[in-house]
Each structure stands twice: as C-alpha cells, then as structure tokens.
Length: 296
Image (cartoon, rainbow, N blue to C red):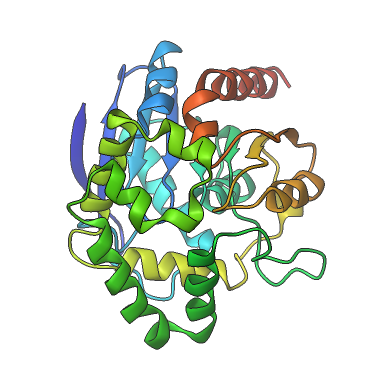
C-alpha cells in the first residue's frame, strides 16, 4: 500500500492511494461525493483477487489535493492521464461510485487506454428534459442540490454545517447525519467495518474544508463537458432500486443513453449495499468487458 502525492503539470498536487501488485492491471477508482482517496475495501479486495492494482486519488479540493475552482466533470481526464503516466502504464480499467460515476464516464469518453469502465450508482446529468433529477432522492439531497443551483455563496455555508456532522462520528452518527439518504438495506450493511471506512473517508476528504465537495456539487449541476455519445470504452452499469442518494431513475436513464452499455438494474439494492454485496460480480463484468475490448 502506498499513499503519496503527485505533482501535476499545472503545479497542482494530487493525493494518491495505491495498493496491490505493481505489475497488475491498474483499476483507477473515482470516489463518491464527499469522500477521498481511501479505498472502498470490497472493491479493493475484489481488484486484488484478480491481480489488479487499485489506484485512487482525492479529487481537487479533497484532502490535500489542490483545489481547481470551476472544474468540470471532464477535467478529471487530464488528472487521470497524469496518474497513468506516473504509473508508467498505457492501459487501465476505470470505476466510479456515486459522484465518481460521471468522472468514470468522462474517462470512458476522453481518456486513451481505458479498456472498460464500471459505474456504480452513478448520478445522471442535471437538467435533462426526460429526467427529474431530484425525484426519489432523500430530503438532504433536495436541500443540497437546491443550494448548488444557487451557486457557491449559498452552497458553502450549508456544506460547512454538514461537514461538522460528518467528522468524528461512528456508524450510528453517520445514520443520524444522513438519515434521509439511507434506506433500510443500506443501514443493514453499515456495520463496524463499512461504517469505519466511511468515517475515515469523510475525515480524510474533508479534513481541510469543503472545497472538493462544493466543486463536485457545482460541477454536477452544470454540463459535464462531453456527450455520452462520445463514450467509446465498454461500460458496465450497476444501480439499485432502493437507492435514496442516486435514484433508480438515474440508472435507468443512463442505461438508455450510454452506447452499448451492460446494465444491471437491481431493484432490491441500495447505494451502499450494491457496492459491498455485488463487488465480485461487478468486477467480473468489468474484467469480461476488458478482455473483449482487448480482443477487438
């Protein structure tokens, strides 16, 4: 396991987490919102079981990764290319959970060398004529994205208040702080290990403030910077029907919009349960698509 800092061509710093065999296929993982470079352990373990290297970065503004004000979703592509260059690899697979989903799709559309992409409960674009973005989300998300639509001046104080409720809590504290976003199926998997991982991820990502969280939210309510029709790498999409953070309708919409997508819409799964319970199946699907892409 390695935790390090990468210097980018524009002078910014990007915090990295790397684990697994140095000669394994790189799985570049884009974390949720808010979160950090610290791994989702079920995904990390499944990657290692396949001989892959798990690589994640705290997006700009999270942890000690330098903020990039006004960043768009597509801007993650150049940062991911710099990570690959630092690793000395030209090919990878990419995954993203929740707020990391759009960033994984940006790489599927714009980053050379992506063999396959996994999207786990990824949020859909905002402002679509055939998708009510907020319908089915818990009340906390309605409030948060309402502030995001009003801009940084309205959003920042709200997130700073929420940050205080997420730092230094245990799993029970997470349920209390995020109650409207956690259906029973997600509360059931918030055991000591997953709860501790979430606590650590929040503490790592938000330790210097809310800039990363704020810039994620602002990017989500703006155009992503690329059309989904530009996606050329094969995509496997996984979405739960009980999800109150990213509703089922988002997965259904993405399943219609992503070219040639391998979609798994699972009515009984939530936002957290799908990642922990389906990790092996998701990486099996990702590996299969990567093998097919290599043969094509």
